[in-house]
Length: 217
Image (cartoon, rainbow, N blue to C red; front, side, top):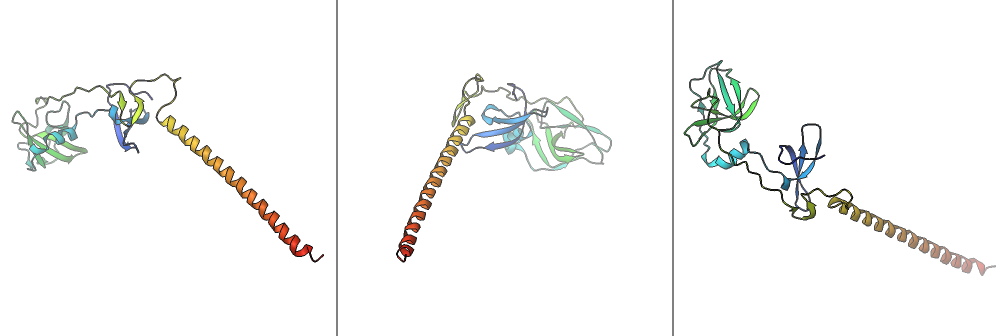
């Protein structure tokens, strides 16, 4: 499969090989999948990124969002100030949150672990019904991919001509083939050596039998 540059893909698993190179299992949403070096991938800012950046400012204070009752529609956000949001209909008399964050504008946000099929999202405690809250500025610049990956000297970010010799895993396969052939050769030599020993044993046994029984004749 061909992976297009500067497009978003989902990585479901990460594998580290014996050379300490990380590979991500990539799925493009169209039943195509494959492994790609993680050095060529850059994370999209999400709730986990927000936690890592602001963990020192997130408190364990829990509470109830004021002025919200059953039937009201409020908004949930992946993280405080995210570009996208989704609507939530309050199904109970109160709406609880488990931790809190105060942004640069002074807005207070409550984190909700789970509610009606939605996991790990934020609600603005001050204005839960406002869909036009300020968007957080995120550094979206993506660095250029490396020309070569450490410990994989022949892996390049540039596409090579299909007529060129395979690199990386191709060389490993060739080396493995050579090792198998060598092993097969050693096995053949062992068989020949065993046959010679058997032949010598037969000859020696024949001599002993001739000496034991030939003299009686």
